[in-house]
Length: 79
Image 1 (tube, rainbow, N blue to C red):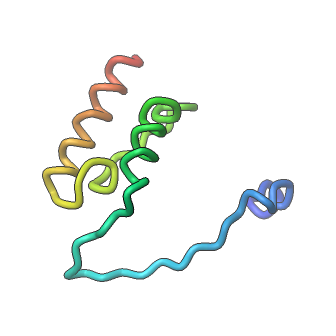
Image 2: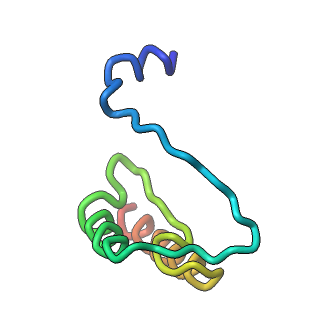
C-alpha cells in the first residue's frame, strides 16, 4: 500500500544518511533556526500533525520538554 502511494511522487523522496552518536551533542548550521521558525509558523499542525523534540528548540532535555509543552498548547488551542 505504501509503495503505491510513494510511487506517485518519487521526486519527493530524498535519501538520507542517518548516523547515531549516543554521546554527542548536535551541532546545527546557521540556517537551522530559520527553518524551524518557518516550519512552526507555516507547517506545525497541518493536517493534525505536530512535531516536537529537542531539534525544534535546543539540543538538550529542556529543549525537548519546552517543545513538547508548546505542541501541547497548540493542540489544546486547536480543539
